[in-house]
Image (cartoon, rainbow, N blue to C red; front, side, top):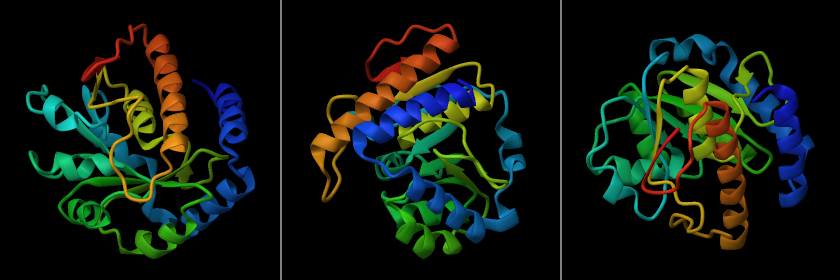
Length: 224
């Protein structure tokens, strides 16, 4: 994926889901102002070159995370609740702050790098929660990147996590508990819209797998 190709995906996603690109950019500016110099790409340096386990919030996550191989542990937002039933704080949490905020904050205090995503619908949560995140943090956007808010590509927390692993040159990315048809449970969720988002996540992961020369076979553990 390069920036030009990502822009094509982003334009199509924004049209399909009625997303305001202006609001997305405004959210990025707000996040940039909150984070300042705390958000720096070097926060990722220690994770370069490691095989990565990426955990999604599918309904069967708990079943498939029991015997995962060792590797860089990346948890996508709402999967953190199930993840913490079986593991200590992960290496990285990728979040737009609509998951279990208390767990995310606790993990940040104990060493997890929190990758916070800005979009037009979460400005209020950015302003409310980001100033309280302790430890290492990086800001991301799906719009034009800023000096301290990066675009690693990806749209949902799950596929964005995989693109971050790819940025880190992970020799293998293992997607655990991903389901592209049944959304994970979440309060006040627009199920139809969430399913459309999952379809975009699947398309983006298929693109990533193709780039990496991997087959993409859906299941509880997907290797790309």
